[in-house]
Image (cartoon, rainbow, N blue to C red; front, side):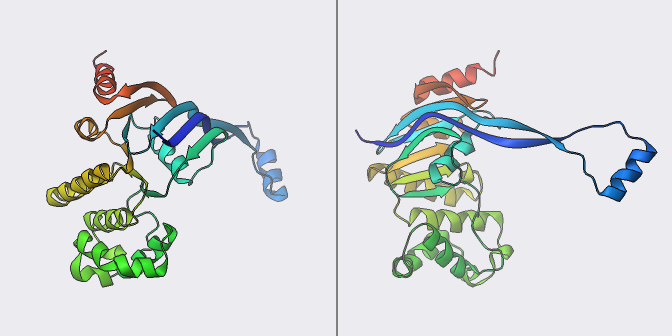
Length: 250
């Protein structure tokens, strides 16, 4: 089988600045104000990923689990091209559609209609393709007359419905999902899960980040457990999830 996504020894770090503490006197404070001096920050780094390696095969549904801050969302953002690795190699084969942050890319003062056009173009569709898919996107989102209202007036559930509808109608090869299905009513969540099943049957690659372990077990053939930016274990979903659950019992 062809690999859809490959991470090879990937490192991603972020700068952290710590204000240098200095003893001061009234004289030094006055001089700093006159000379407009600033305390120099001490630069350090936080490693979101530190030597991450794994692969996802084409047509596979792959789950990523771990505690908050372990690096799960960073992986998705690297795959989507939002971040670039500091070192290591990432290979992605296919068109990507991502639901990483709820409503990311939506302009609050644009209507739903206008945001469909803008987001569709960001995801690689032509204006003609967006027009052709428009009615299907609106129908799936179930937001009715709100389509011509500014998205700042939308509830979080409406945000999710519109974002999910745009993402799935791009017809991606690789679909990235980060916890957004936790938002919304039960009926629409079932509709989204049904769409994911449809993607699986069509041979799409799905990478799912979720704290809902039962969902990961249901949809994913393989899973990866990460902690502190490093892989703990990867393999068959049931094995990985069971090991992860055991970590809470110690």
